[in-house]
Amino acid sequence: MSAAPRIGLTPAPEPPYDDDRSPAEDPHIDGALALDRHPLIWGPPGAIPDERRLRHLGQALAEVLAGRRPPETVADRLTGRAYRELVRAGRMIQSSRPPFAGSMHVKEPRDGAVEMCVLVHCGERNHVLAVRLERRGVQWLCTDFETA
Image (cartoon, rainbow, N blue to C red; front, side, top):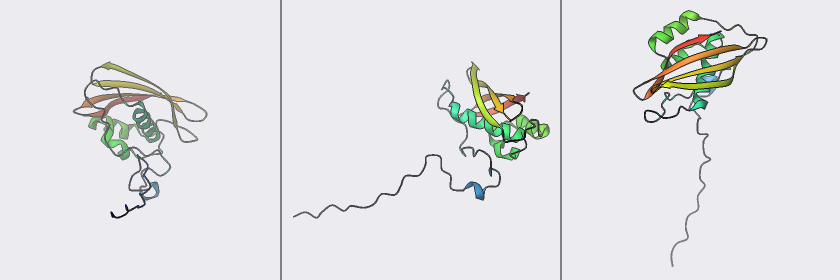
């Protein structure tokens, strides 16, 4: 006679974007949107960009420009020149409440380049954030941004 199969408990699945550290352990994201710790990579050349990750980047940039997030939290997603410009710009968005990235418009003007425009809701006045990303190897990096 064969032995009865063993039945064991399976561990509960973790959320797909859960990090090892909680927001309380990382002061850079306390009260702000936590960016995925992986670089912006979208498959082979010509792959359609993931708009959810683009929106998260727009949200994070808006938070930096509103003075609610330190710029070093997005440094790995910007070229050196764009990061220096972000630090130099300082607080460009004046708002009484945290910014919220709303509707987004994305275009791919040429292979290896993506431009997006994000409406940023800031309470009394809305702003617009324009961002250009270019593919550098397999990673997409922000090369320029403007806000008004």
